[in-house]
Length: 242
Image: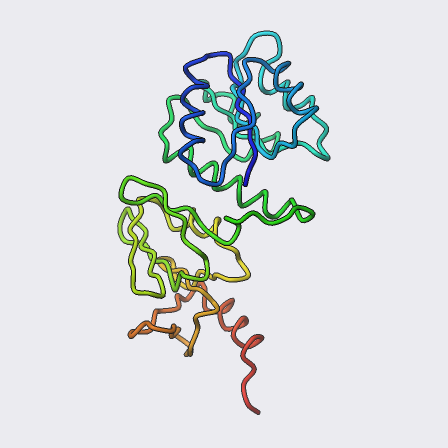
């Protein structure tokens, strides 16, 4: 679970973020803060993984607030602002995301998923959360938690991404394949084509130009740009007979 706070001097903006956090299964709201000073007090007593903060606030703005935090244990940051001109400065502070108001839940969810992926890489000392082996997928007007182990492959289909599961279920989600690739563990999944990611643990056979997966009748193509990395993987993991 990713524990987060939201910082904004506008009550309506905080209300929206609170609603978005409530819809996101892997986020836990620790506090809503009307100022950087309020947020500083929370950080002194709470273990916080992620900060959603506005930039244009009185007294101390969001940029100054984040710069004031020690880099060695600074939480992940997603800036939420109505001013696009701050984006470059935001990413210079290694911001995980930059949400331009008004932003949709899909935009919020993408930033949150990226933060979760980064948190799992940077929190080795923590006990893994119960959702750490899942990816959240927005489909059919809800957010579904899909276990990594249940995914056989993922493929793009126009503006959508299709998750093909081991039980034959197919889930269509309005998102980009490259965003899904970021969220899936690289030790378990590999992009083998510009339109396809496969679960490496589901490989049942391979050839120079294709890969065979458990339960999938037709092989999937391995693109020219991905072939070298794929063949290096299978040569290492599945040594051939002399």
